[in-house]
Image (cartoon, rainbow, N blue to C red; front, side, top):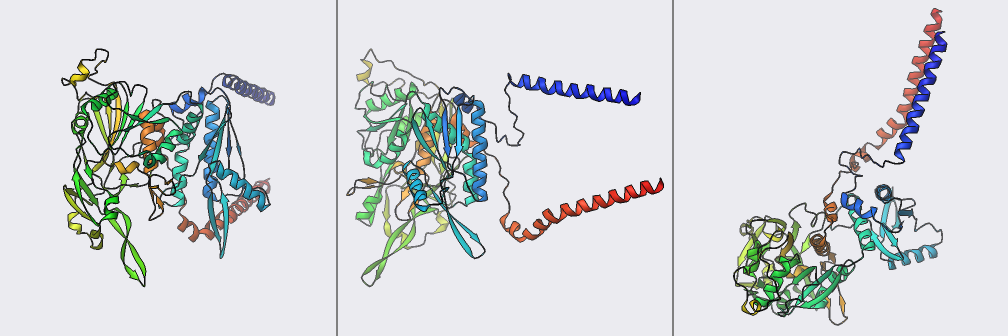
Length: 564
């Protein structure tokens, strides 16, 4: 009787659990929810990303070239990429599909070389990995990238983000952290219906087109870029979303200032790249000495009203870019050495803001300090600043290339870091309140705005930060931030792209760049030193445990049946 009762109870429990499982599956067919149990919410997509992928009109196909026999670090990048794509697919109603491809799959070298060439032409960069096993060193070509395809359009995405003087593990970690933002920005680029418009101002001695060619090309992937001469034309900026003022060298007229001011008041974004002091390396290449003198750009009152003061001084920093200087001759050949050029500080990020998150140091040239000015309704954020070994030089200042031959007096470099890039956000007040130019007062068709809508702008005290080098003879330009003397690429390009993307981003997508999570990495030195111990522990210990439990079971059974 008791056995029959137990059997009936077991059957009821089984039917109950089966019913619960069926019910949960039925509910799951109508209710979508994903649970992220990681401490840092690693797999939780931002609302901006969810909104982006949930509105896809067609399938996005992603070819990821991370497959095959990969090193452990790249295997982590592969797994993280797959997991992130799964998240994107889940929120896109399965309108994101992907495949992982091994570009080195073919045993024939000729075929592999052809695949490598095609991927390089499509915009992916390879990494040449060296693996040491004992005394043997082997090389492996890896293409850590992907190609996104949507409605016949293709965009390449480099998954591994290289960083200057960074360890491979750090680069992989940062690349994994940025996967959501990189995927989202690539998808946004693919599905955009209307491009926003950016104008580079001309007419005030701004950088000529060849010297902003690199950043213009980069911005053209996202936006429509053009050059615009204001020249007092009231409605010249109406169709623009953002304005870039790149290193002007002559004064702005009051009419042009007014037009820019009203552009800001009506929601237009401005990236100011202002050099308040005239000093240029080109002048020092022609002559060993020059004078740094203030520039009158007639913008001080306008920027002060918005919330900053760009000072007419020059900053020197012990953390500086090295330049080659001829120190003599060996036979009839000139001998050069590298010395830090204190007027070219290497600028580090000053916050974890999305614009400057995980970017390399920036190359600068003859920069000045920026002070923030308190304004009601305006929030200022310092994005870039010099090191705490800074010296401020007043102008006019005599500058000589020969100063590199003498070691700097470090006692003079004691000032804290000075701000050189400040982000302003909020409601700005027009600098022309109660003083509209007479010529504009007579125009009844032009409406004056005293206060802006919620807006943002970025002020940088170095026009050269956006300037790329240009070879006039070959008609060839280099990447912005590239230093041809050291053959290094600094973070200028990434910073400028992030800055413009942030100013024009109305979806909050760029906020994803500041998302961080900790990847628990092995201590390589400790792992190598304790390799044998952990190998034995993982192979011998389980066997010993099985033997011990077996012996205990044997003696317990023997004792039990011995009593019987």
